Amino acid sequence: MNPIPVLETERLILRAHEIADLDAFAMLWSDPQVTRFTSGAPLSREDAWRRLAMHSGMWSLMGFGYFATIEKDTGAFLGSVGVQECRRAITPSIEGTMEAGWVLAPQAHGRGFAREAMTAALAWCARAHPSLSVSCIINVENDASLRLAARLGFRELARTMYKDEPTIVFRYG
Image (tube, rainbow, N blue to C red; front, side, top):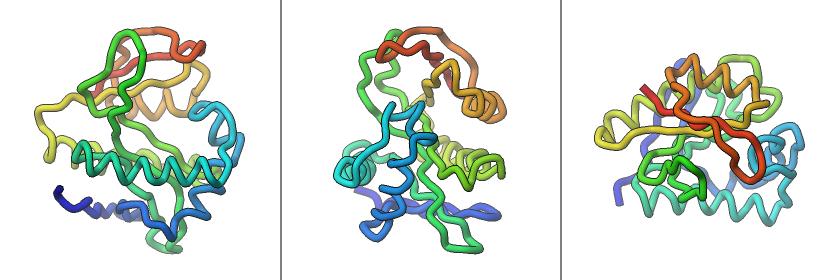
């Protein structure tokens, strides 16, 4: 397995998740505002730990994954961005693509961090995995993520239902 890269932007460091991130990661995933369009409900610390471990495992299995997103100036853990392969039961299928996603703490919202981080992550994906396409799915009510996806260059592919929620499937590029 190749080591997980460290990416730097003007304001951020994107790196592997670490055990030391657990408390901030668990706080992020316990916030109803954060989980409304992701897990659907706040996660316990135990479930957040499983998700953190999954992020590390994705790199091992697939050669890509999510990055811990750290603010350079403060060292604060802001959230996670990157790509994954979830093998979701969704039509149309997105298996075999790198599924992009971003989850940032509310104090990071509206400051351009998600766009900055995802721009770096998508550029890395294009270099490291040029033969794989990138997709994402977004709940139709998640206006902030819909706007970000458009700014990043995602195009709507289909409207569908995922876990009984109206969802849009996007392709990048």
